[in-house]
Amino acid sequence: MLATPPHTLLDQLHGDPYVGYAYSYPHKTAYRALEPRTLGEVWEHESRSALSLYIHIPFCEMRCGFCNLFTYSQPADDWVANYLSALGRQMEVVAEQIPAAQFAQLALGGGTPTFLQTAELAQLLEQLKRVLDVPLGNLPISVEASPATTDDEKFALLRHYGVTRLSLGIQSFDADDLGAIGRPQKHDDVTRAIERIRRAGFPILNLDLIYGGEAQTRRGWLESLRAAAQYEPEELYLYPLYVRPLTGLGSRPAKAPSDQRLERYREARDWLLANQYEQVSMRMFRRMGPCEQTTTRYACQSDGMIGLGVGARSYTRQLHYASRFAVRQKSILGIIRNYIEQSPAEMGTVAHGIELHNEEQRRRYLLLSLLQVEGLDARAYQQHFASDLWNDFPQLRGLVDHHLATFEGELLALTPAGLELSDAIGPWLYSSEIRERMEGYAWTDA
Image 1 (tube, rainbow, N blue to C red):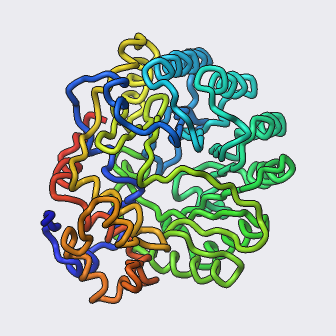
Image 2: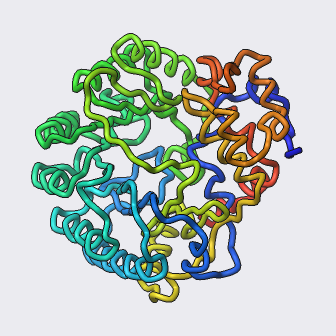
Image 3: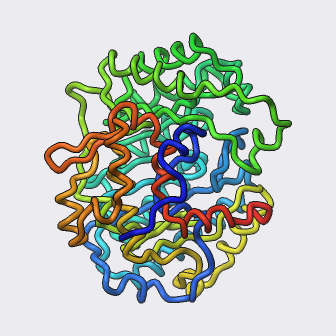
């Protein structure tokens, strides 16, 4: 029987429902130094027929107050050029050590990929075609953008190379709200960016919004939702605000808590469900109706991912790895410098990450399924691991007993009451080993 968390379900949920965003498992703060091995050794026995490819661009035009992502603001031009050259070298190493890799989806994230100039984006995409034989135009491709870094030329280029999804970080349409979360942004930049995206003809537009800032009101929040919905984005992601260590908001003097995030979430969920959107997860809402949806053979539960660039996560069934993680600008710049200076042999060596033994593989499968609206199929779990879900995770019965989940026809799915507590249920299901690693992470060194 697998280990159970140290806290009861109600103890956890009656505390803070916003513990942490379980976007993946394990979190990067659980990574540590590994016994070095080559990429060829890591991928030797892995399936390569439907991999995800992620490219990390660690540059932005500004650093938002809430941001703890691996990104550096306003780099010098030579830093960008040298970074792209290093990405090209890393592609060559991957092509040599992981031959015959076939990619089912591609994402450019960061940071802000559209911080790159049009010619730089073209250089990067051409390298992906030439070096890694990525079939641009024949697979789903997602690119992240910010309003101030967009123009018609960039978007025309991205559509030419087959980009199918453009994700735009807006966060709010309310000036006071934006000021409180440390994001200077002009309303005209936002509207022009969305209009450019629509003119370019991307099949999927995603808009990101944040709720829970100290200046946000119910009225202002709903007005932001309506302002976003008027553009009929195919996707809307709603993120609760987290104040992280070492961020701009995290450095401000602490104030008495006035947490209205759960109220804001419920208001947005109810409004979207009443206005032509369906819920996919706590964060993701998708527009219903006749809109073009891209499809992919990639399945995050069983297929692997190759990440290129600093901050990019890669994973096989048994090993997750990445560069070191940092939040402070000085530390990030040092990691970028080290990456730029790496030799091909160093780029082909895995030395930082985490081994996933059988229990952690099961927990990952559980978390990535349960936190989606469609839920976890116990029969699929049985077939995948030759093991019984309820024997492995007896604590799941507490979700059903407390009406936070239902179990019907072998499908375990969170109820609306459970889904809104995803950020507590996810961490509640972490193993004690992963929790200890995360709690022991040296933030002062980041």
